[in-house]
Length: 356
Image (tube, rainbow, N blue to C red; front, side, top):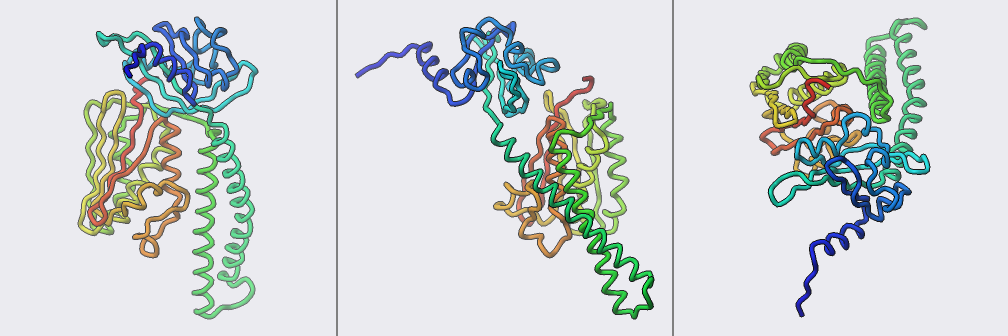
């Protein structure tokens, strides 16, 4: 049996039945189609939104700034898995994950834009609960840890009487470890604060070449201790970009510090920056022990440490989680590739915004 289904009918069947919100706009960003899941999420019927500007319907936190659909139409490219918050017709604010893209006609000209999105409320709620529990835990344990360190310090200062050498040795260990736990708790609280989205953003024009050079000079003494050379290359096509310098500096310090720690003596660590279309691609490469293939998907999780580093190299498992939060706060992504025994490369992709 032969069935002939028109493209339009096939489109309607797929479009209407999608389990995620989806709508089409014309070149003026007026809605021309709106599926049932979009109706369920936003509260708007299709007949009510046809002909309206998408910004008047979604009222997203991005609509008044750099509209994702407008970007897609102007740049003729797609944007995948971005996050925003929309306001429904009833005033409810709903976190969404969305992708937007231009739609082309047979001649390759832009004729429409499409956006798909899904409700992230359950994910956000679980993340918020997790962060609250971890923050409460960190706050509650911080005071006892500080008290232990303070008491150890008083004993070391012989405030309650003289000590023999063995007692001093044990107290110094207690003091050292309590300080390490305090640092861990402070880093965890800072990470939770970044992930909450309540941090103040201070983007400044930054000469990336100078910025990276300064970071390298700061960490070079540690590299020299292990006879490791650090090289850098920043493409001349990269002009000053807008960064929140303090947290982004921590990202670079963390990646270089890890590269040094996990590298073999007399090896090279390199950092390279180039412009790829509308993005900056930053690579930090080492010639170290590498990351086992089975560990790679989890290296940005809280407290996760590769099985080939446990007990060998000191670390807290917080640094890469913090780096990911900071990079994503800048609208970018971070990932890694590695071969065990050969080395690792961390990639950072940041939107290239020389003049916001």
